[in-house]
Length: 172
Image (cartoon, rainbow, N blue to C red; front, side, top):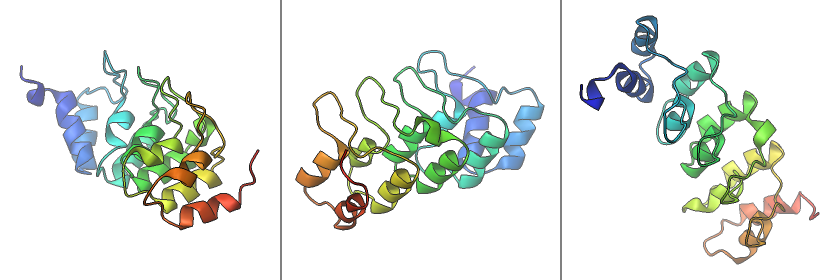
């Protein structure tokens, strides 16, 4: 059977498109919504927190009992994937449903959710604000000894709102 013909893939595609009635039908037919991929240890939340997944699909997965703090084989949580892809609705939903417990979680590469804001441009001051409000530590260091606050001071193309936001959080 081709991968694209598998029920798990069809469930993924339905969720990616926000087709919750179709997703529910696959689940009722026995498709495992709590499936974890063998190598990457991804849940549907890991896979769908990035990109353009409709917020309704993220909420649906949370309501189905998927763990918002599940850690994959890379040490990443769904929140880290959502931040990396600048998926603000997913970030908010994950945080509203318990992801703040791992707001300062560091995988092996040291990239906290806040540090992941700098994974690609444009840098989002709105995401920074949401993460800081949820308790992200702007002074958490990665292996190089750098912190989010240090990066803000040296990176080019930094929106002026980000340094302004950091002024509200005194250095530790």
